[in-house]
Image (cartoon, rainbow, N blue to C red; front, side, top):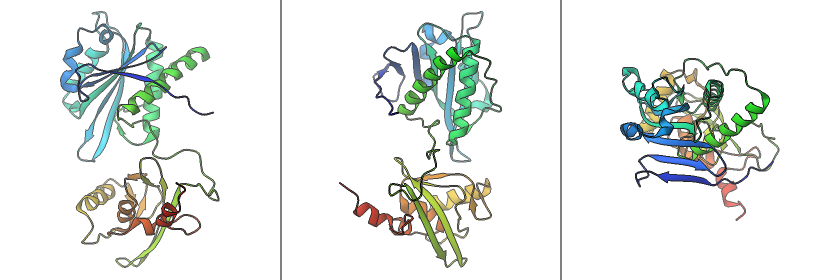
Length: 299
């Protein structure tokens, strides 16, 4: 079934795209706020911030050069405070200095109870880990609690809307790099490309697979990697390869996790350890190069 179009209402609360943003949908009681860390205090007087809700902390792990998130929940406390106070507690934690942006999911009618937010926290954490784009700092996947099938259907709609809005705000934490459905390799429209090339540095044949997506080129796990660097390899790729070897994402010349690249040449250079023309290195199952495929593409 084709997905329906959606109209997202985004209110720039400061009149700036880098400031606070309030997001809503027609006929939906949910409300989502995107808040820079330094502006959290600006919202302390808003009633929604004193309600129960789910929050997402977004930042960057500079050592691993990877995006980071933490997903948490908060219920309304006896003192009348709620989700915002819980987030402000993180700002006083010396181990939580990684995040710069916060996204809060709550409702316009304060309808989230303990069961609802436990279910939502569980599902969001699972989805973020499955997508594999961000380091998810949650130690364990929280208990989902038991919900009726009617309530589950209602909460799954909230999840669907939240994923769409968070992605629209620029955080692809829940977006898998590749589609889960396996493709028929005999399909002329298959998005898989293959690389097979012998390198002079180690006299080794490197074989790899990537998938073209709307974001670029995703080198798939199981692809082989030439460990030795060419002296002319760009410094950014050298550093990336060294970091992935150190973190064991590359083990014994084999890639263990998907890697996304914006260009086919960078994807090929990452694998071969040298500068190269990815448009001729990557080929489809019939041996046609990416260059040939693009030049014969229907306009």
